[in-house]
Each structure stands twice: as C-alpha cells, then as structure tokens.
Image 1 (cartoon, rainbow, N blue to C red):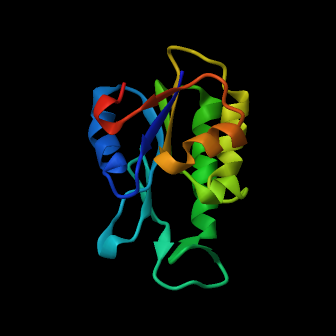
Image 2 (cartoon, rainbow, N blue to C red):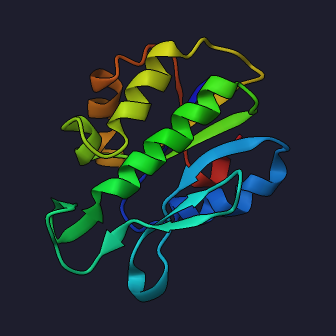
Amino acid sequence: MIYILAGDIRTGKTIALAKWLGTWDKVKGILCPDGANDLRYIYNIETAERHALQVVKGEDNTIRVGRFHFLKDSFKLANYILIKAFDEQDFEFLVLDELGKLELNGEGLHQASDYIINNYKSDDQKNLLLVVRTNLVKDIIAHYNIKSFQIVAKEMLP
C-alpha cells in the first residue's frame, strides 16, 4: 500500500514519524528533521546516520526553495539511500520525507520517488509512506501517477 502522510507545514509530521518508527521492525528510508539552528538534515532510518541538508547561505552547490538553501550532494545521497533500500526489498515501510515543490520540478528526491513509485507493486508486506504537504497532495498524486493510495494524518499512522 502507498500511504500519503499529509499535513501542513510545521505541524509535526516528521516528529510523529520519528516516534512511529519504533512500532515496526523494518522501516527504511529517510526523514528530514530540523537540527541545530533549525537547519534540516537527512536522517537515514536504517543506519541512524545524519547528513547535512540545509545551509544558511546559497552557493554553487545548493538548490534554493523560497528562503531555504539545500545541498545538491545531500539530495544525491538521499536518492541513493532510497533506491538502494527499495531495490533490496527488505522493508515493511519505506519512508520518503518529504515530497514537495522540488520533486514536482524534477529535483530533490524526484529521482528516487519516480523510480520507486513507478516500480512499486502493491503489497501488504511492503508499504511506501510518502510525506507531502496538504496543499501539494493532488499535485504529487498527479505528477507520479499514483493510482492506489491511502491518505493518513500524523495521528493515524498505520
């Protein structure tokens, strides 16, 4: 099943996911929580490794979204982590946090999202959990041509 965790910006979606992780044996993927100075980082769920994602100032190696600047190499790493986890097929849930404007423009986690969603076969034993802002849910569903899914709120995680 593809689950879409929908919620508005800064409403605790990632915090709820971090707490939810312990309720399943095999959860893989990435979270993008806030760290020091409210700068987001990539958290590899399988290894518990953290990698910088957001920086204060834009440079040649960053992507800008509004007032935020993200490291391009960190997105490459995140895409690799997600595709590798999907190809290994050793998960109950694969978490993609979060799909948004970058992905709709073919950037950010788009490479992994496109590959995973297009190659996913519905399976009760292997689920996808996509984190999406409420106002972008319809756009993400259309962009990735998602046919079968269930929208959940952070209070109703599977």
